[in-house]
Amino acid sequence: MTNNKVELLSPAGNLEKLKIAINYGADAVYAGVSHFSLRIRAGKEFTFETFKEGIDYAHARGKKVYATINGFPFNSQIDLLKKHIKKMAELKPDGFIVAAPGVVRLCREIAPEIDIHLSTQANVLNYLDAQVFWDMGVKRIVVAREISLKDVKEIKKHLPEMEIEIFVHGSMCFAYSGRCLVSAVQMGRVPNRGSCANDCRFEYTLYAANEDHSSLFRLEEEPGVGTYIFNSKDMNLASHLEEILDSGCVDSLKIEGRTKSPYYAAVTAKAYRNAIDDYYEKKFDANKYQKELHTTKNRGFTDAYLVHRPFEKTDSQNHEYALSKGSYEVSGLVTEDEEHFMCKYKTYPGVDVEIFAPNGIEFDEIDNEIGKIYKGEDGIYYINFKKILTETNKELESVHSGNTNKIKLPGKLPYLTMFRVKNEEKVEA
Image (cartoon, rainbow, N blue to C red; front, side, top):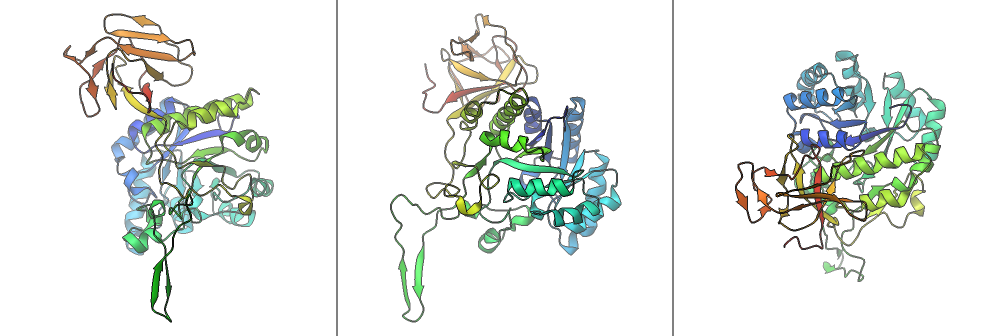
């Protein structure tokens, strides 16, 4: 909790995303170092050294880092797991996110000074299960994504000292909070050990068989229904934050997405930060937050199960496509020296590009030989380059993603500020 407000918890797939999430509004981030994390592929982007750097970066800014150790180990891995817990504890994170009861006990034995947060993979839906984990020393539970707000209230009523964390945004599993074996059966990649192949996002062709007649025929799909039969829409509860926070039973709001883009990390942190702050200032405006969240790549949005009963849902599945294109592309990211940017898409001279920056940042309007930074009539800041100059003053006609040269800015902008353009715009002079 931060200043008695609900905590905003963001994903951090690597060190850059950790810094972005923190700068754009997160109170805390969660991440892992490969072994025993449920997102092993994302976790590979962190080494112990960079994870320690991330923890130090967060702590220097009054933020927290929770380390994921939420995989499900085999017997042959337990000795390695013990060493991993000890090594992670030495980095001094603010908590361990753990799924398996045996690993909870192991963490309490090896690193009793580290708070334990119970992963959503434990599928806690009621106060009886919550009580068992509380008795084991768990400080916080990340409740199952299938839970109702009514049941969250009931858990808090019985265990008022236990912190409760809920998911409010991100990808949904078509199975029960990740309890899916389709990937293991089809690809040999076990979802609950961090290597899900996302088979539920694939397009499928359906067949019917009759063994008595040895017949097999293809089922024709009804037009418009589609064949992405397992594909869940993405959770988006931004419009329901008033109801959630009014309940008084939630301590942390969690955003899914360690494998998502840096832009996703920035937009979701900023949108939910604004939503939380506006709630406490009694000026909540759901349309404002949704406008930003819809710029990210998504599979369509659903408010999932927290505020509606599952059998009332008619909009939780997307049968038409696996991943839509977001309405914006990130064209640049400001470097640490705040005087250059790295191109992430394409940049041409003479084109107005929107500046997307952390909250509370005011820019000086600048107009010089390199370009200009100005505030438009719509209240949005823009940058327009007159020249594309590299760090060594080499002039380019344009710059595209993959170019490793730093490009000069007309004036200083905060580290990790992004430039973005609408997809439908042609970014050419």
